[in-house]
Image (tube, rainbow over all chains, first blue to last red; front, side, top):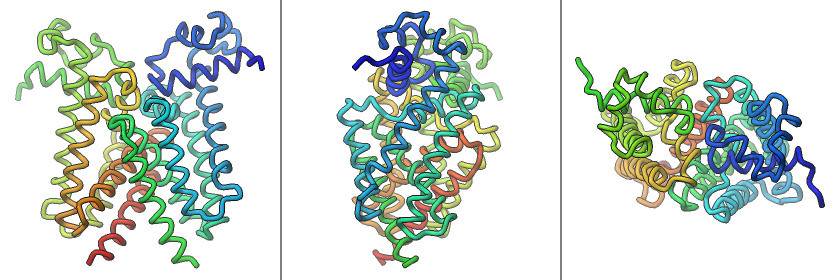
Length: 194
Length: 194
């Protein structure tokens, strides 16, 4: 299958952001990784690196959003699903040699305070994830919308923070500890609602 | 009080890392912010930006480590202290215009997979925080060392992840949600041990 140039550029950029961040990634490197002519970047992304960065954040965000139904659709138990989600995230990170953490978090920490356009893109993606997870916790866990939203946010925070610690320690301990905390608090919250 | 050049450089660099990351920060900008001659950076940090980066991570890490006793020494209740810790962290972030998140997390996401020396420095700092928090949870919460360590890791992960989401959303909602989740799970764990 031939992947179109625009998609090759988006995929290569997401990969480079995950590994070395936004500021550490240059357009020449992107062109080389994407096996695309340098000029094609400006052809597809006339706004240059900033526009490309925003599009990468939204595209990667939409791809990651699909992981939630992939784990939970047809899955029997919400709490087990949360444990499985953290386990799979850790497994993926370890298999990539601790390189592939979350490109959105990296950009949010690096440039959110100096680039409003990219900050808005990271916020949009996180908000979408929060809404999806809130819906899951409401429908499947029977939590109130407010209780579900607070837990959705805390769950995503715990996952993102665990990625940070795992990149530093090169162990799965942070993913395991964070997943257990989220799962066990969720289990208690659900049982109070039943 | 006159702050020595070396310390001015470390403080300015930590501030710049928090706001714009490691790769986004240049030595000229550091010299300018620190009101130090450019050559003084290499005088104090012969290894250049990488050595300076490692020293900044360790210095900032040791400073943040002092926040734990500041909140908990003499504090009556462990669970209330955890809530207060997240609240203060959020307040500081908001007061800085959502700029001052954690320089160690930013560097861990940006360069941990491409710079072993800086990765080791972030790991060392996180491990110190984990050990301090483990000791607090063991001594004051009566948790077993394993249970305390897992919660210490999850707590730091939740805090770091909440910083990421708060930088993106420019609201305190992530700090509040993460703090509540950690505090309520901790409360349940402590009551099971009593």
